[in-house]
Length: 426
Image 1 (cartoon, one colour):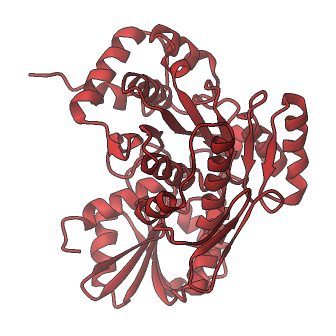
Image 2: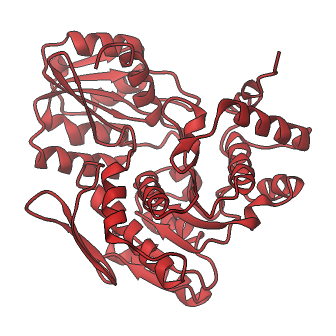
């Protein structure tokens, strides 16, 4: 019987977050430095990096390239993190790579994310991908993925999240994200506060790394049809993106600017026809995704920080999605997430609120945490229920009188909610 090495990997989930590049460099050295042997795109950002990665991967695949995609975390199973041309790594391959990494690691200390990052690089190298889209895990400068020398870097957004590790101001977080910028490597900067741009411009001058800024060098707007018009080196009109939500405009524009840079560097020739086919096919489960069950409309979104909730609210207002049952579960690794403020952003639109505990390898906002927070919030407590587990949250939300349900928060919470929802007929 074949040994399952996933159990070995999962044992690392509670080793915590340990920023730094020393360990990953040693692990990769033991594996023959696979990351040095294929072309990459590196994507960081407080929000939007996963969607931007998915968009770019689909476009490049549609242009006939063999494309690796490494993202995190996953909704249902770890295989989602490692894709080649949209197809998840097969179970037996995943197990084999984990076995090889375990043998090379021996007793060397590592984190869960460092092991999965090494696995992604080894997998993409042996699959002989033409290019790999690599999403940062946390921050940028000291993130395990920051050992690559990409063809282009992208920083989608800057917001307050993981402040224990990245700093408690936007300026400090911007510096950490700017850490993925490399010498003479173009960098695309998404929609960020005007006062943060000089941080990236200083890095641009230091590294001679051309910086392309949203609103100055490229832009995007929603047209009357509800599709996107992009303007950069090229102009693309009436782009229909399969990912919904106003916030996807920034992600799409960052991906398109990076694509223009790749063309300029001779990597591909952009076909508008292939581009439109790709955008209509892009999938990113859990990002402003609508499900129908019985007589209910369930909107799923993995907004997991303050900026994410603000962006989500803007989309809800635009789409007139209101008077809903809000089902919410949040992780709080560093103990500094403003979950009370996050809740307050959505409460004006919510008719009823379920605050939930759930299973997660990370620390969560517990029911006790919520009880304390509610004392300081100006909320009608009659419409708030505290739910001790996700299975109960699914059952109660489906039995509620509300026709519209918004499920949001941590990707781990959303994934668990969908897991219990899945056996039901959608």
